[in-house]
Length: 253
Image (cartoon, rainbow, N blue to C red):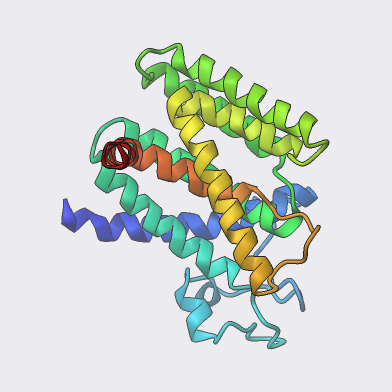
């Protein structure tokens, strides 16, 4: 099993590079299937040596070989994070069929993280494509009980919709649709835990950001990355988190 971790990590790196392209292209209706990769500053077409995940960024010192403009660190971060998360998914699920769902979920989150960080947008096109993929996967790899997918989707959508109404727009439409999809994929309990963790991550980062003046009070913060972090934490480690919580409650009593 350990022998497989390296190729799985490398596979994640390569796909992470692709997810960067998709997340940056789809929200602005750019084709990512026919366009050659190019520097966003000077439009220089990138050579194969400049497209090696993570490594090219390090070799070039984070700069374009042509115009020497700074390359966003988002590119290598997403590539590296995708590789790491693919490895975690394999460690958690092994060769179980749920691994397919886990890798698909990671793929969705990497794309929307790029999109939300860059444009403050979670594209409907991305959610619709993945909704179709997850529907097929859950037909052949259902939750137990199978109807937990439907219940999780309804509760996820309703919960976020209520929050959006009460907060008068504090929650975006993309977040609402995303949680409906998350509920379908992971079920009700894991979806609710993912929401609590996403809220915690968002609040924690917001406080740190304000303290260190990384964000300005009143400015919107993309919630997609926190939804991704909260959901993957709950999805991979649900039993461990609930176990730690019960131990904490027991000690408190």
